[in-house]
Length: 314
Image (cartoon, rainbow, N blue to C red):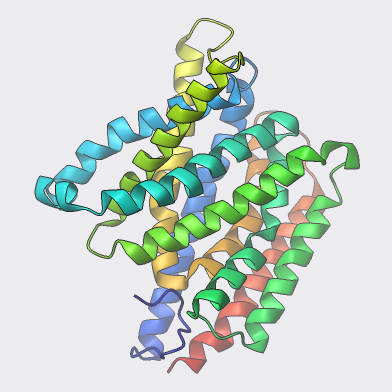
């Protein structure tokens, strides 16, 4: 399966097909980032009373509980049983389970917008992954798009006080690298499954890793339970965080990766701080023109990286 619109072996579809694939791939990536951004304010509320490891386990447990029946309806029970479960456990456990824990921990140490901004390293990480796997040739326009995308992320980062970075930044960077790898492997290694199936099977691996992290944390005496009773507000925030920000967002992102490649899809991660900021403004925060400018520059990078590359595939 070709992981990018510019695979080394060429693309048999014509210019019209490439344009349609690019349009749908970018639309899916935008939808993924919008739904992903909705989870940051929800997590901000939940992290006031939930330990990160407990929130991770609850998030994955709720998503898996809802998504497995949907997957069975879409692909059929026989395909669910015959899926490559062992391989999915490694991708989901290390890529998603560890990655999600680190990003929750990063938000606990910083704030939602900061975590989204630090993820601006995603295009570079994803590009290196595609180059290493041999699924992309590095053309000048794509390289320029990566540079401009990172530049946009750095402009947005200038709005963050240095005191907010540190360990939280390291957690966010490592989480982004794991997420990019897991997304590429998920889209590539399960072609027989639907987008919902690919997402769900790796979420199960993530849930197993989260359960192990809860056990280890409890063994060493760390908090693994919420500090307050579970109420209606927490239930609503958890639904948003698990089903919309993680479940629906990852389905959209894996579908986008299948059309654009993980590198191009990851460009959209750099616009996520803008989406988070808009949501936070609605909730009462102030508008920040620096972050808005950074989002505009990243949007330009997406155009730069795709236009000539698409024409070259004809």
